[in-house]
Image 1 (cartoon, rainbow, N blue to C red):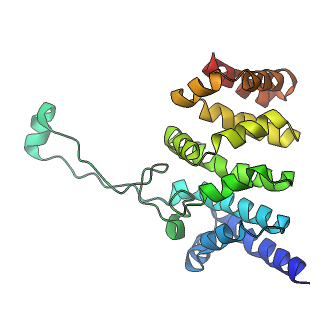
Image 2 (cartoon, rainbow, N blue to C red):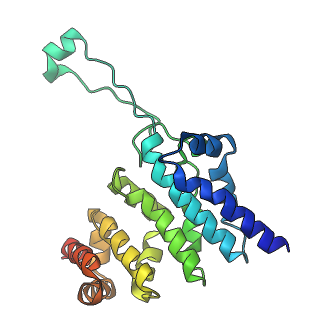
Image 3 (cartoon, helix red, strand yellow):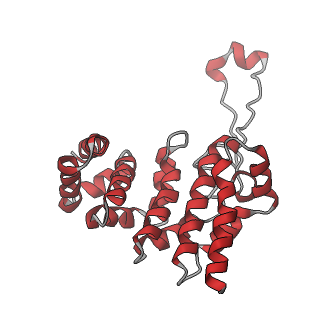
Length: 233
């Protein structure tokens, strides 16, 4: 009974992550219990597909809230001389900021997957045999290139974690409609970075997959596929 017991507990705990935007107490609970670290640890429970899937979904929910929780740096007011002779003044340099969220981040306080080094572990799930685990992992990775974050830096983080090829592979495999929709969305975001677009432009199979998505996808997918094709043109 250990496996169904663990799966049931996971589903209960993960429900807390669905109400973060509306419930400050839920955010406090996740911080106090360091749930993000727990979910990252459970990503690696090989053989327990549902535990891995629920962990990835919970991490997606937590990561989506990171941009609202990160503490943006306070830039000091310019001095009188600096404001008067603005051409001679240098903007203040703030160090120690998260590449993706451009603020002060941590895994425990802001649920930042980058600071928690979760990206590599999510990328490792992208070749899982269970399509539901793959979809959950991809959704969590997509939070690094979502609206409200530094998309180019998020794309570079995925690139450094060798996550671009697995995302392209998901697009090429066309295992399910949901996976293809999410993969097309992710690929379009990645292709906004010139270096990645240049590399992908030489792979005709990716262009063919985007053309196929443009021809056979739903209305929203066709729009995104069209933008992606423009990036590699």
